Length: 129
Image 1 (tube, one colour):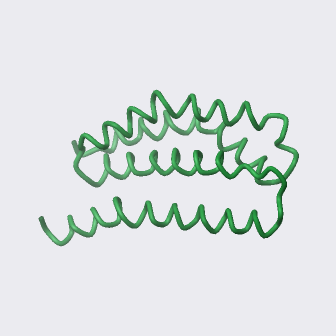
Image 2: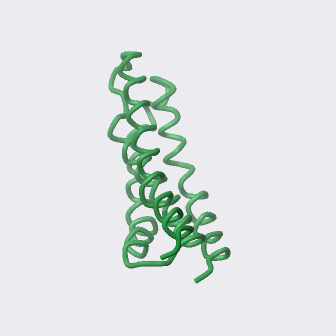
């Protein structure tokens, strides 16, 4: 494995997930500091995980080698994530006016449906594999 491959692997599989987790933790701290009632903490985690998975699959397809784990991630993004995101959108449809976090999470859930197919299509288009 070359140094370039090691750097790419570290960025995709370590730094990107750590950046996402750090961003999520900072956002939850901000929400708690603002004392938002019934904050969509779990829904935000699901949205972060889903969009993070989408990013990881895209980066893997474009810059790395396809693997069984990438296939499992894609399987979730195609079959599981639409159910999760639809459930989030449905659960927040009447709560989206409670705070900007409710509204953003609601919109993230709805936007998954046009973003995911486009991202997966682009990953396939730009894939080296």
